[in-house]
Amino acid sequence: MDSEDDMHDANDVESLDDFYSGETAMASDDDDGDYDFNDTDDSDDTTSHRQQQNYTILNEDDIHQRQEEDISVISTVLSIPKVSASILLRHYNWSVSKVHDAWFADEEKVRKAVGLLEKPVVHIPKNVRELTCGICFEMYPRDRMHAAACGHPFCSTCWTGYISTSINDGPGCLMLRCPDPSCGAAVGQDMINILAPNEDKEKYSRYLLRSYIEDNRKTKWCPAPGCDYAVDFVVGSGSYDVMCKCSYGFCWNCTEEAHRPVDCGTVAKWILKNSAESENMNWILANSKPCPKCKRPIEKNQGCMHITCTPPCKFEFCWLCLGAWSDHGERTGGFYACNRYETAKQEGAYDETERRREMAKNSLERYTHYYERWATNQSSRQKALADLQQMQAVQIEKLSDKQSQPESQLKFITEAWLQIVECRRVLKWTYAYGYYLPEHENAKRQFFEYLQGEAESGLERLHQCAEKELQVYLNAEGPSEDFNEFRTKLAGLTSVTRNYFENLVRALENGLSDVDSHAACSRTASSKSLGGKGRGGRGKGTTSRGPSRLDDSGHWSCEHCTYANIKSADTCQMCHQHRG
Image (cartoon, rainbow, N blue to C red; front, side):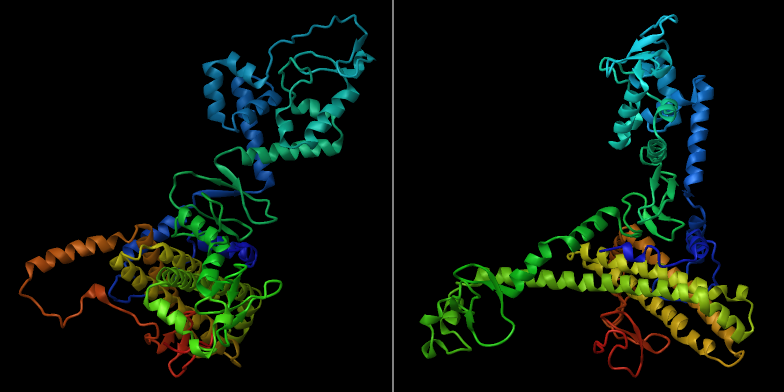
């Protein structure tokens, strides 16, 4: 839902940039399973892909520099003033190639469309000392009159008012033309600098700078509130995920927060569903009934079947059959039953209403299931970001002193927390993916839940190690003999978890196509082995994972919040739900 909370939580920009560009190096770990989560070749390919960053983050100075370079190129190649080059580029959305193509195809047509005149249309003799302003019609000395390339003269006061009004109206001032109604000559920045007050000059320069980003299809502003960075993206280069220097990650294509492996269409539907009134109506339909008189929805959460509507209606009725309470009494079942309702129900009078209410309830429960887990992982990611900040600001230095280790040797801890933050983001969006996965595709759903469960379990083990086990060494009085063992364990869990999630992301981006190929192989194999094993064996692809199954470290994952709890715990230490 609201993604603004996680925009500026991590302050160490360099670490985030290193992680997202694939510069972190983690220890590898071999772990055989039903699904090959530690395929070295695939992992190397993915890491290599991350290293090939397909975008550049630009600050204001970078934007100015690029803008001036493009203007200079056009000015040099076309042999025109820089002011004219700027007007041309603005007209063609700052595309140097488009300007070249159009100019050399038909220079005269381009000049006419843009308003770049080669010769003035008004010729004023040199011996004329006073001219009439075309706006106020007052006579002024020649040195107080100004004109664009067309030659139409206007006084300084009228020009200043005309320019200021245009600039205050917004970015449209970048396409300013001569005040003469019959003239289309462009007014460039050189006249703005001469005639406009300083405040308007700054506004114009700001509009021109923003135009370079907003009108260029290869660049966009970072959507984080208060961020002044822009992104230059190589279109068609693979992943749309961008990590800005402000530490906010977003999707280049839709500018929502980064949501790989879920596509932009699914994200748009999910965000709309979270903010729409449809779920409110579903809840009302599933948990309330309309007053038979005024039709206002009423929720009943306890008590007898005698309902009184709120003022001014005050209608009294039976909750079950919705009939007037004056027609009820002991003969109809008293306060806690209704014979009329039971009789009508047996005759099918309430079938359609009950069916609609049941459908709304099931739909609401399903949506709530996925949304709660989506939101829980969002909260977990926020906490992980805060823990990462605390780790970098305070605890790394403290641990370095306690364990007599240089901070450069403790980089594996930061890498683990960066991996946790990224995995929480991926895991969050897998719940949106699962919600829209067709229910009739059982094989894909089972495979998705298996991959998601394995990745989730691996993440909880990593989170447990980085959060709980690290405290032992932070609270130690002196160097611990087994610290190197902890280093190996945490680095290994980081590597394994990364591999789990890379396989999960790859599978979802491929539309779980492995299920189709696996099903085809299974059909071929079964047709060749009709006399084979009976039903007693269990196939490799049918592995199921219960919500509270113990993992290798003796922990069980909570079905509600996925927290890894110790074996002896009967309730989740995080959300206090009972063990499944």
